[in-house]
Image 1 (tube, rainbow, N blue to C red):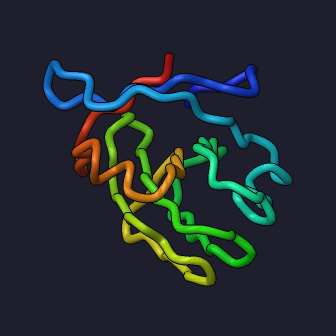
Image 2 (cartoon, rainbow, N blue to C red; image 1 turned 90 degrees about the horizontal axis):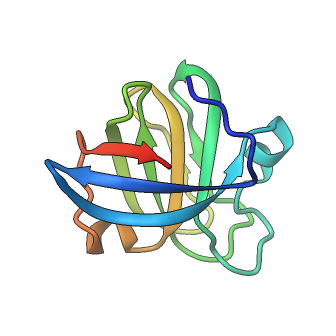
Length: 123
């Protein structure tokens, strides 16, 4: 499992040899940062949640003031599940285990052509 010492990290999503999307993520690695996530933020920002072990991690969008996409990533750094356009006051219970969760501005996963199985690379 990779550790992240910086507050921000860049990520690339790869489809075969092509980079489909590259962007900057704010890292949520402490329990408090992961619990807060997007709650009470005036704007949706791109976040990376780093979990201590690979498990199923449900999320909610209570007190989140806009839609967002959730991209779950396994320990092998491949996308395991994508939940686009999550509305406020929703609850998501993924079916697969993951080690990372990337929350993106709504519609970005679809617009970039992200799919399950795609490789994720942290820079």
